[in-house]
Image (tube, rainbow, N blue to C red; front, side, top):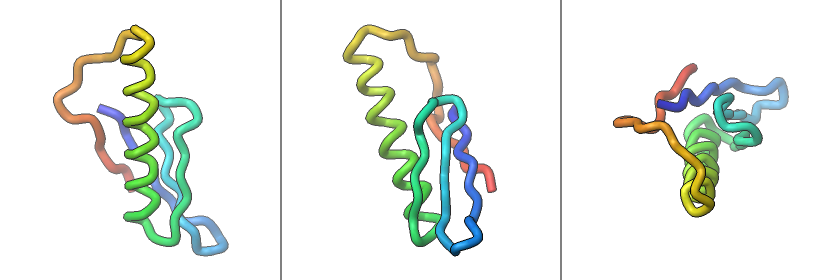
Length: 67
């Protein structure tokens, strides 16, 4: 399971990141938009790893959202 860490910036934007996947960080005007962006980017990275034969951990649930 990949944890998505979410926080609000001082300018009001939200940022969501997945620490286990370097480079996965998404901004949005709302918490939900930022989380969806981080999820989409994470799935792209995982798909790319699969395409290139890299090992992925077996997980039942891919994401958990951490406030």
